[in-house]
Length: 129
Image (cartoon, rainbow, N blue to C red; front, side, top):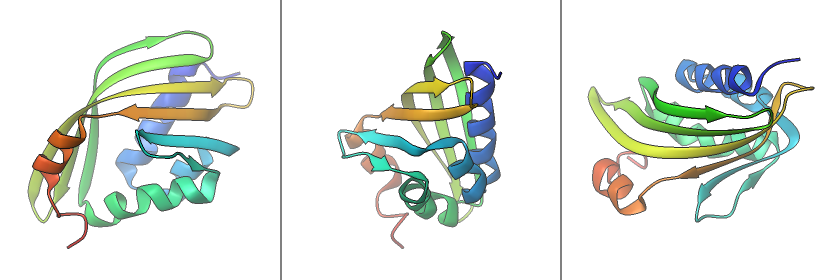
């Protein structure tokens, strides 16, 4: 059985490797990923579609963990999400809350909280170019 922290570390490594298949495997079949306040992506394919633009546009991704609090099935992780796009580094602070099925080693729900104004001011239209 994996620990909650191990499951999250696997997910963060998948994001940093920019591997959509590995990202999708980190979630249960009916897993949910929310960029709050938007509606969640439900299911592995929808989660993959949500990550596709940032993975496709980024030359490199690094999610720097600032602090983390873990229980058996829940994690709160404060991060600085860094993306290198067209040779430029973009960094936005985030806070993620994850629910984890440790018996299966998958995330069942992940809610990311970010200041959307700061996200838009930092990245602008770089993802749609």
